[in-house]
Length: 232
Image (cartoon, rainbow, N blue to C red):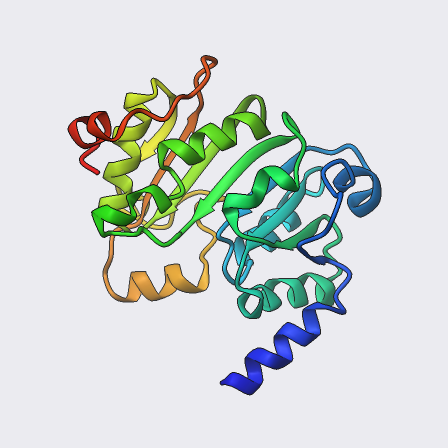
């Protein structure tokens, strides 16, 4: 297993669609990577990158960037995109907390968050990708009317996200407690990641919520308010 990881880490260094901690890159995605001005969509905690690649195939008029710190997983999607000639998808290896260092303000059209770590321990709640502090980051990145979309098997993260979006007065676009309740959902919710397939075999419920952030600046409330209103 260790040898496989080392191979993948070495391989992605040679992939022209993978960028690892690139310097001075905020304004270069459209001009130097995709070479067009199409909307940019991010997938955070992209894992193996299946969602990014499949979205890119379906929407050639958009550019997709899968972001994760785990390069050995990212290898799968990056290799798939190269093999299949999917040119409107790239991968960025960074920590999500660093994202403002790599994208200009108001440059992103959509954000997908697919099966992230739910950080179930209350002491780790601030690491959840729909925590107030992350919504404040996304607000800087997203263009006007940009959408955040979460897909998760975690009941706790789903409920937490509902509470946070209510607290911040976000506009809910769609909220589906169980996307498979009536069979296979419509595209793009029918795209399955490796982990989603495992969750379904385990009979877990898959939740989905999408929302727009408020126009008012998001301020992370004091910890006391968080514990009272979002149970963190």
